[in-house]
Image (cartoon, helix red, strand yellow):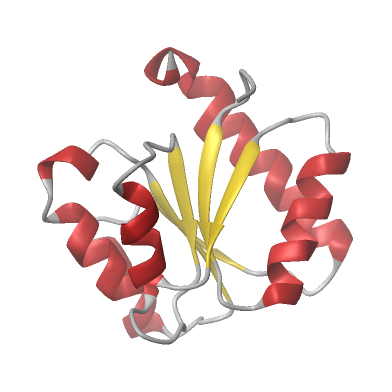
Length: 136
């Protein structure tokens, strides 16, 4: 395993997973991404790994992002992990619910690769670069 921060990305759309992987690989901000296809799969992965951050979609089968967040915030061993939503869901009630349940950030998915590059840069600079001491 590399010295790069480990991030768990919970996303059911294969194209979106590949899109993010491509942006991260081409960026100046290396991270190791582990992917889960829904919230239930993420919980299975979390039994064996402790990522520095979780980036999740909301609308997914079996267990959606809000349900995942509720489970994460109810378990002591996962309380310290920042959870960022990266989703197309923009409803005011959904955003409010995410923050009420303990989301650290809520970002609307961009529709272009340039938009995702900009968002990845901001995520890295704020959540990883500024918080390196928490990851060591």
